[in-house]
Image 1 (cartoon, rainbow, N blue to C red):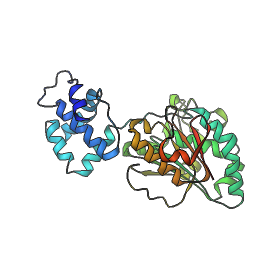
Image 2 (spheres, rainbow, N blue to C red; image 1 turned 90 degrees about the vertical axis):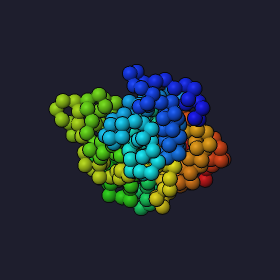
Image 3 (tube, rainbow, N blue to C red; image 1 turned 180 degrees about the vertical axis):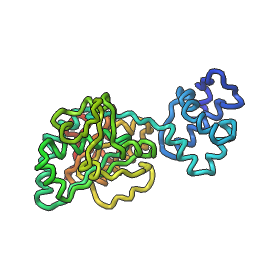
Length: 290
């Protein structure tokens, strides 16, 4: 990884090698991988500079090499730097075939379980700024508030986790502009979004209160004790190498109830040990074999 970074390093225009060098970029790549398993491609040297330069300036250290030395011993600053380098692109009802499948195939099962007094658990892993998990909750609760109140009164819990603290702050605020809310189906939007009069709005309290947002590094220990009926982890694994992907999917499979569903990103696939536990039931949709 180091040699690759050194060979393909592109200096940031106007910045001297004393401030930011190829060796600095290689060191950042190593630290990020060690902390989060995210693989920064060798062509991301300018992105690393633009994302970390404000932190370097605020530190008062002056150079990337001095800042990197701090990151080796200052866990809080290291976490801040890793979060600054994460990609947090998301959208409401992104990859809508997942929500179509969830609505037609999974939601009826959940309604039956809740009606029988059984728990239902959902997890949005790598939830970013909340659009995914709120899309999932809107789809589950539906446009009928009477039915929604009945579901909310049952043993239903939704977890949303992300590594980056700043996106969790936005997710908890649950306020989005007009462009962000455009993909939300009108029937769901009218029930679950409080409009601001300018095309934007805020997700209403019943859903906000349903979702627990937590900071979580997927590479670390998972504190959840109960298994999940559904796990969404989409367009997260594209930043990992293959052994990390295989290990993560195996952990997801272990965290699902028998018959539970795992939804992953459009360019992601299940491989490794979990392939024996998960069967493909739709486009990038897997069900845990009983």
